[in-house]
Image 1 (cartoon, rainbow, N blue to C red):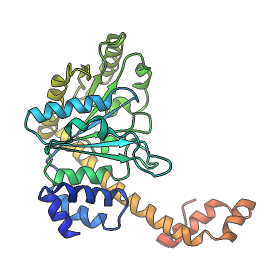
Image 2 (tube, helix red, strand yellow):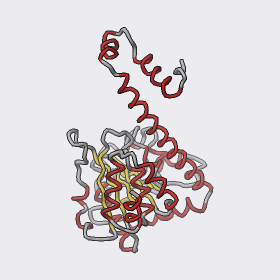
Image 3 (tube, helix red, strand yellow):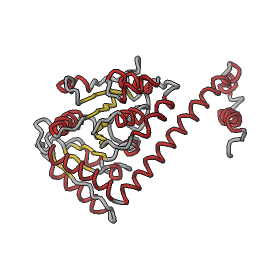
Image 4 (cartoon, rainbow, N blue to C red):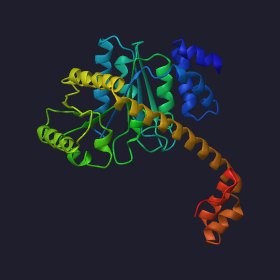
Length: 316
């Protein structure tokens, strides 16, 4: 494993791909890999792209790649797709849509399936992002499955979150959902050649005006990703936000929150794995029959598992 990590840090793409696969599949050596590479992280510009299905996120991501490459920056992309219910693999195949970049050694594209994970991300997204960062990629773009009340986990990973909206798709209602206004550092009104874009822009700006004492006011950009209109200005705002985070106290607070999320995520995953392992030993035919008959209840069963984990009864 140490040799594989060394090769990946040295720029070997195959080793990088193998490590991400190990992480995505929940390999027990994941923690060891992350301990090795973590000191080398924190240098990349990490961008989250989220928005309604059909908002043109993949096309916009494609244009962002093109713009950053013209600036001489290397770009890593993690495209989080819905998973196949049969194989667990990603099924939207963003790599096919972005195939014109596959011959560019300065671009690395990886599709990852959600595998039932909530929050619009896959289970290994955070670790894969840190790995790309450690391996020297200048810009990392994470394209999430979508946006909604539960799909705000992108703020736990990305420096800058771009929420992509489209006129005529009910996005004026979508952006009013809890959490959406809070996660956006930049608003993107894509397909700006469609009717209604000015109305959506006005509504976004009106809601932003209601949020006072905010050190960073999210800019609202109109883009037409199909032909690249407005993408250059969008990149300028993304870079400006990154600089804002590096120089202000707000950026330090964001970093505190992000590392706190990381520790919590690691704890929850580890506790979940332990609980699942113990539950498998408790899940006998007798226990299952008792639960079905209502002779036993799941709260008592869960309490027994917690007691075995911590030596404590579950709080009543």
